Image (cartoon, rainbow, N blue to C red; front, top):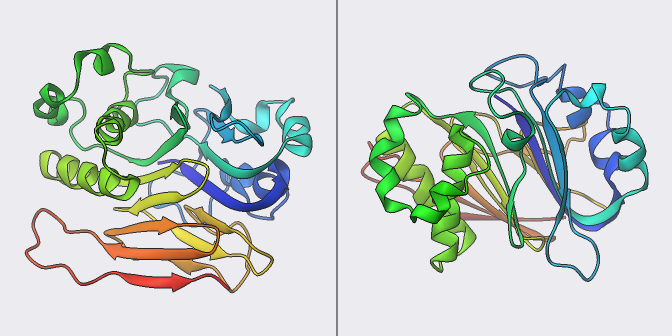
Length: 263
């Protein structure tokens, strides 16, 4: 369900990352090449980006398919940024909450997206609700699984966890409460990208010209794309990518992290 992408690097027009590539996120909305669940991502889309001198990102989101938005191509052509997170959505529950349910979700300097689905939603996550502050529950943007997963991540971030710890602990907690969930999470603060591969595809590209792209699937056939193993936490900067295996609740041992240098 869904496809998403994050970028850090030299300033680029949004269109060069999302629209122009032959298999970019724009095309993935109707013709993804590696999506394991669902075939069309027409239940909304969104893009968030950072402007120079402002740590709080801007967002543009819509409830319908990206190809039906006649203004998006113009926006993507002229807006430039050094940090971007975008997603196209295939809803777990069709029609739920419209634009409010479209990623990226945002709070302060963070942008967040969830590619996947929580098994047994909403009943499976009811036991986790008491761990959240009441104000966080009352201010959820949408009534879907992704919004609640974001609330769990955000509570950890506000509690002082770094991005990697917040995503890793949330994924393990949700997977324990709702086995068989697909939890590919994507988070950026404008300076780093943090992601999980848990049940669906995730790739990264260390661009020869500079910058790092993390995406559900490659947007072109560049041989430098690398697939992230399932059950893995990825933390990326503009120059480095660190991969750390995640411990499945049913596992007892996990191997050590590995560092993947950008070239």
